[in-house]
Image 1: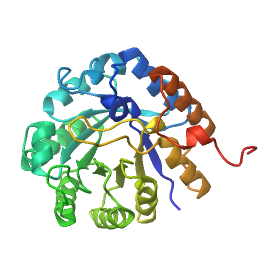
Image 2 (image 1 turned 30 degrees about the vertical axis):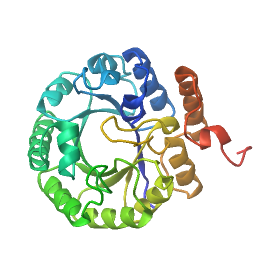
Image 3 (image 1 turned 135 degrees about the horizontal axis):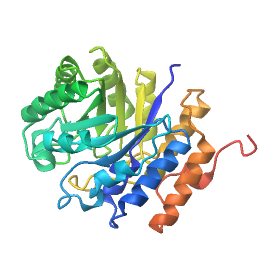
Image 4 (image 1 turned 135 degrees about the vertical axis):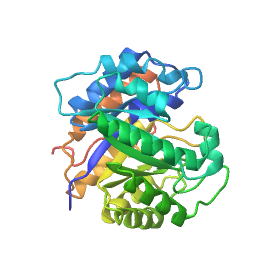
Length: 297
């Protein structure tokens, strides 16, 4: 089976829903520790309004504190061109742009329509390429919307086709609120791969279906999986959306299924343990608490 790139979004999607606001230096240290464990892609910051998401304030400071001597690609999330203006002034090498497949969520999360989101994605992708940056476009609420309920998979795949035609380097299908099941993941990935660009999934484990859905996505051809160290996270604009699937839980699955990732699971568990101490609580992830297996590997 093909190698899978695991992108840890803990420093961004993980911490944005925490009640405590961690200083930029601590968020940068988390990203640095993930890189040292072998995570090849880390979503390190979000260039959004500080008053709306104070947990992400100081994105430029986070970027400035990241190591340069690493094989890890550090990315930043943007929701509009103002965010991209901020990102391009930093050392980050990759832009992640996100819009939702459902109108209500897109309005609440980004203050625009889905059509405006698609158009902005195209402009951000074009600008990123002009600046020699990779551009990943994430389609949120691809598995379901907290306000509108079921989302038509045909609509999601139509949006994916347009994003691919606009030149995105990669498409990620996001289960923003954790309602997806394996059959959905399989069907969406199989459909999106037909548009000719790498496809990944971003899953939340709200209803404990994320690991199974991730494996279905990989079997269908997904080559990118988003995870969040320790399973922390959630969306401040999505009611009852709990944490992302834990990166170490995904990694255990992939390692046992002989899918190469380049990540050291033991080192990743140490990072989760460190973050639990920083946050002062147990994290939702399972593998960091249970430990790897076999024990004497």
